[in-house]
Amino acid sequence: MRMNGLDIQHATGGQWHGAMPDEVEAIVTDTRDFRSGQTFLALRGPNFDGHRFAASIADKALALIGDAQGVKLWKDLAVKQLEVADTLVALGDIAHAWRMQLQDTTVVAISGSYGKTSLRSILETGFTSLGLKVAATRANLNNLIGVPQTLLAVPADADIAVIECGISEAGEMERLAAIVEPDIAILTGITAAHSEGLGGLAGVVQEKALLLQGASKDGWCALGKGVSELLQENNIQLSASGISVESETAVNWQLNGQELVLSWQGQQTSMQLALPARHWAENIAFAATIMLRYLNDQGEKVTLADVVTSLATWQPPAGRMRQCKGRAGSLVLDDCYNANPVSMQAAIDTLRSIDGSRVAILGDMAELGESSLEAHAGIDITGLDAVYLIGSRMQPLAEKHPDAQWFASTEQAVAELSGKSFDENDTVLVKASRSMALEAVVNILCEEEVADAV
Figure 1 (cartoon, rainbow, N blue to C red):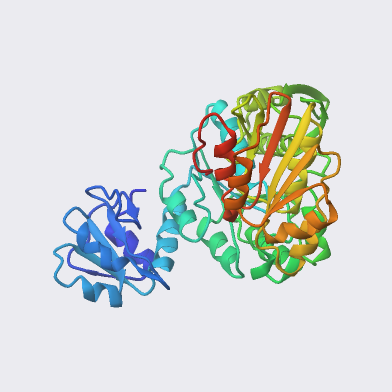
Figure 2 (cartoon, rainbow, N blue to C red):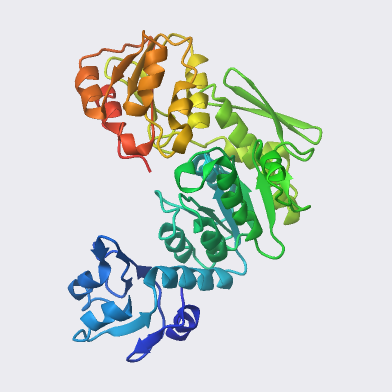
């Protein structure tokens, strides 16, 4: 970002104490690893107050941004200070102001109950391979703090910014959409994930749809499998300019083992996947559909083969079916970053299609609301050679399958599984919601310790 003090004052409705800074190039919310010349914005939460840490970096800060209560703590600090009503709101307002200066950047927002990070990484790989300058979400910066941070890090000369938007409570999507104001709004798929805070599937649909309604004036949407139907069932009007994977303009796909065959407007090409994963195939075809629409709108003459070639180097992000070598030669599939019934079943179906002995280590899926136990019990684990289930929510599934071994906690599973030996004939899937911290299981299975999934 590159904004002056007056820009930031106008964006936030705040008031500077002392002279305005001529130019602000970085706004950060964490004093750890704070670098000289940055501006510190102090966030406040139920159990923390960032204002109390400002003194430790004040001598290096260009400026401080805080609320009225916090600024009172800073009266003895000799540094420029902007007082705002609410620092979290101000962070979003500043990010939106910077987004509106990105006139030559196509801003893409991705949400959905599953597949956000995979689709983001596929699009980032493809657009970058085609020579475009791409900025994208890093780690899990997809909430009301992370999305503004991601936007503020987008350079002025970026061709495309691909931003994930994640929600767990009502009202969050409307705010995220207002901050991002996307040129392309994408919904990957919708399930009852996070329904605890949104009132069931209908509430999730209503909330996710706000991303589409917050698109820029000339923006368009792209809808994943089943999304269009869910929106129509909930009386949500669709833009005529949007596209979906069910439309005639979408890229079609067929998976033969690990060969993905794609076709579009009389063109056909193929690529090899690292695993026979149908959800990967679906995501790649969806990404290709979006890329072709975008590039055609830009007047670029590209073929399906051009786009598919650009995607050939894609690798899944850590914690999302990432392959690692087991200690005794097994293949371990690290998919422990997140889980909901759709992604859980997709991972199991992929495992089921792999030759050899197939082992599943599955943990609880979080935030499924009243349907949680039913959703866990409904997971199809038939046809696998060994199944280990972890967590209280997985107990109903274990009761349905007496051959499965159940552990009450991740710690108990680690203790028991550390004595197991899986060899070169075994493929071991490890999957659960992030809260289960099953990377601890991955680490006892793999030759090299994995980093935390991002």
